[in-house]
Amino acid sequence: MSAREEAAGMRPLIGITGRRFRLSLLQRADERYGDRCIDTSMSDFATRIAEAGGLPVHLSYDTDVAAICEWLSGVVITGGQDVHPAFWGGDTSVVRDIDPRTNPMVHDVARDEYEIALTRAAVDRGIPVLGVCRGLQVLNVALGGTLVPDLPPGSVTHLSPETAPTDGTVDHVVSFTPGSVAAELFGGDAITNSWHHQAVDRCGVGVVVTGRTGDGVVEAIEVPGHPVLGVQWHPEWMKSTDPTLTWVVREAARLLEQRSDR
Image (cartoon, rainbow, N blue to C red; front, side, top):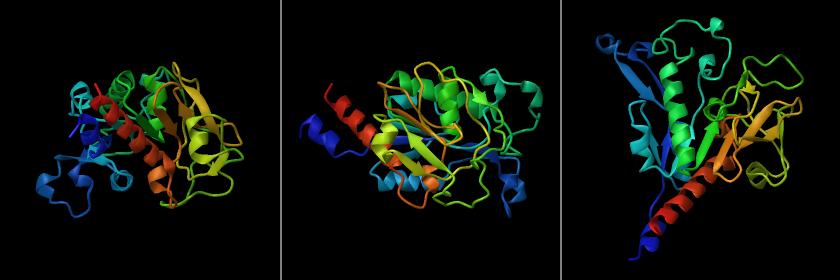
């Protein structure tokens, strides 16, 4: 069997980032282990990536970035806490000094450091990257961009009270730039879900905005010439099939085949 034929039968390995918190946060957890930590990732990502033909693998903060990039064919930077403002030049005086392992809703510097390093390594190596919600913001920050710390109330509801999974409401319409990856996936526009209060402000190096809601808030970014896509909504929690997760698996399969030809 040739290398190309062998690669065609392989499924691309897709790394998925997540959170770390103490077991004491789990209801009915054994108190003897309450001070120990657990690494978690939203299972919806793994399920949908597997359905799209990929092999999902959850990444711990302890997974060496350079070493794992030798194996991965794709990366998904997932949602979660706000990126600490120290990483993008924001106001650090508003940060609460709370252990993220005991309150997973506050900033997690260890997670920020890991995901920023992973994003940069993946982009440098041409590994496809999909950033989701916080992940879009991590992608922009990793490439030198800044964020809006708190979106003001407006005509579009971005921090939705809806319960996942949902396809969103008619007021949250994202319009895409013609010729962009997002436009190829969705067409001219799409209704999406939304659970965020921060957003991209100044774009990082090479980053372009390819999707916005009617109030101008950035909802999709890309890095032309690279297999990189960030979306501000949650594709893993859309009731309908969201093509972004299929996209990252397809691009990862393409990279896997290219590697086999070398």
